[in-house]
Image 1: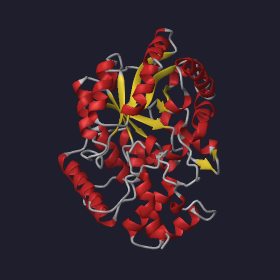
Image 2: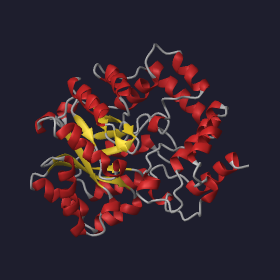
Image 3: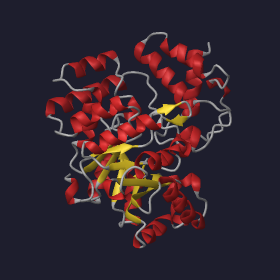
Image 4: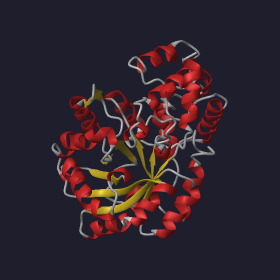
Length: 375
């Protein structure tokens, strides 16, 4: 889908996701982030994506420090989101929105998305007139485009878009591993967007990094192609869909940024050979007992775990053990649990599962992690 036929202020089809930034301890590495922002803009792109809860609020602050304080407002497109955890009633929304503007150092957002829509939280957005408030903010010039990001089944998205046909764009999780996954249903969700003629923004094209460090058998398949990084094939897979006008990447360092820019500056869609190869890679993943976690950390930031278990970290150790069949998973499990907070400490409250975009049975999975590492 040609961007200039949809939102002519956007340059290119590649966006900088501000969810996984370079870090120094608990703080954003501003120097590294500045270099990444400069490289991104110098390459001719201008789309940035953040949310109030990303990095516990540090993402918006980094937008201000690395982007809006350093560049004129007409040099970039900025997307922010209305997240369910930060409002309980209609009267909460405008003060939150103003707080987001101030945190980012801007007077308006180019896109404002109803965040992580699902059957459960859509009720809250309807009751609080969140969509209606966003449409009014658009009339006031504080938002240019109202959209939504989505994590649920296709029929739920169909209901939302039928209820609010004014929505201008939909952000979905889309990658070759989730394409026909029974839980994520990326292709079926994309088909709903096509049905409603909604331009699509893609998030998680590399599935939180899982499509970068591949199992040996999967990597051997990629190695048979004509060069290119693992990220290049994953991101190009998403960007090749006609309905997709923007593909986001959450980059954590300048090296990742430069790699992504190298193939997106002169973007070419996947050919049939590359596409078929990626579906074979997906079959390799499906044959393994891997946990379908992207490391978004919603489970420990949106609803804080009462036992302070680092759920994404523990899941990554389980996947590492399955993929590489060495001691690295065990070593990192000991690091993640050096101060307690083991998988077996889970009290099965279910708070994490209510906000998981991947719809994981986290309580059962933590039990399996404990069985693996706490024998």
